[in-house]
Image (cartoon, rainbow, N blue to C red; front, side, top):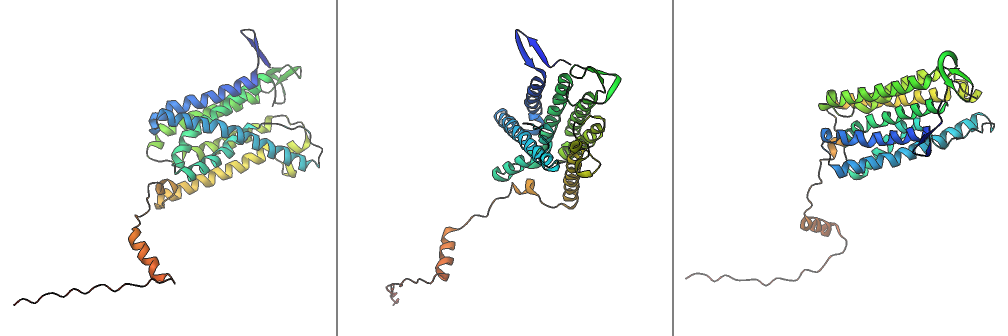
Length: 295
């Protein structure tokens, strides 16, 4: 595979290049969808920046968690540490969006509908980068793709993984312009379930370097299948709660953002506090006015 690319006299790492293009695709998708969601250009730019910053943080958090869990499972023998793990972006990025929406009273379901295609677009470009770099390879396959580091052809598991993520992007876009016009909050959990299922499936064809990755905690699953199972369950619960709330008409956060606190009458509030206050002020006697009797 081509780990580096020479362009205009510059040598670029293909994995980092694909990751950068994935980030660019997020901004492009946001601006293409902004009219559908009724957002202005500056607001869309802010949402793009927010997604990129906290997407990086989500990938860093995932790497920290992965390194710690695999180190603990191997009793300290695991030494293959990563700085970023992109599969955690679909898992942790909605948490940052939820915190933002709670603090700034923004519609969470609407924003996650906008967020969904961009997240899985990043996953598509990342897996293309894995293919070009030759990492995350599959089993030896005479009909596969050439791996420069290994010196033989391997099953193109990264290509199928990238195509699956691209298909999820298309599904999300179709739902946004069809089902999503009348219903909000469904796009992201549906995409999360599809991503968890497809990635968990393709993980069975990927070669893992250590026993702690292949059979995590003796569950029979790889480490990443274990995490995809968690993502699938969380996305399923998210989807079920969204359906139940809509069917029963239960007010949720998106409906509460339009509520306003009742206007407080300062005078009445002061009089109420004066009645229960232990401190009493002396009332001055008011002069009595006598009306003259008419003759």
